[in-house]
Length: 245
Image (cartoon, rainbow, N blue to C red; front, side):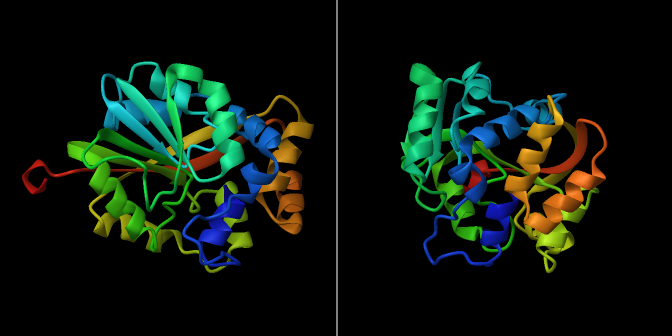
């Protein structure tokens, strides 16, 4: 996520509204190992179940990548749609989920869905990185039914050690500014303490090398002892006001 995060903050990002994600776009197999390591104890999923439950409702996962999270939503949701701008990942996601979910090619600012057609818009470390994501928030609002929720999961750059490495790569990033942005947009915020758990050091090192610049990755690898890595996240949730629908 961190390489996409850097581009989203204007470090070499093209004018196209699609924000490239060099980690998963260039190294999808390594990123699959990263996804498997993340949230080893299910902390994020437990928080989502409490604050934005998906059982029996229609869900869209924005920036779904190769569909890693779609089967979890499909286990209980009325319907699941993954939206992803990068064609090779769309193909991988469709192969993963089969007929359990639909996967459509599209971006956060132009979701290929009708107005008021879903109950939950989920985005995890994708597009919604803070100021500048207003077009995507407006699009999420468009496709939500009254009472529906948008749930944004992102890395918490205020939490060491991962947050320290993020800020080392993007020195002008201000976690407090991002949190204030989501507050002014009407979102709640919940901090989540998770563990990434790797099967071996080779996998851990490969993951850190696709997430950070070479110097920061070297530092991160030296900092980590063992195979567990504590990583903080933020969960932001906002519901669409029935009265303003």
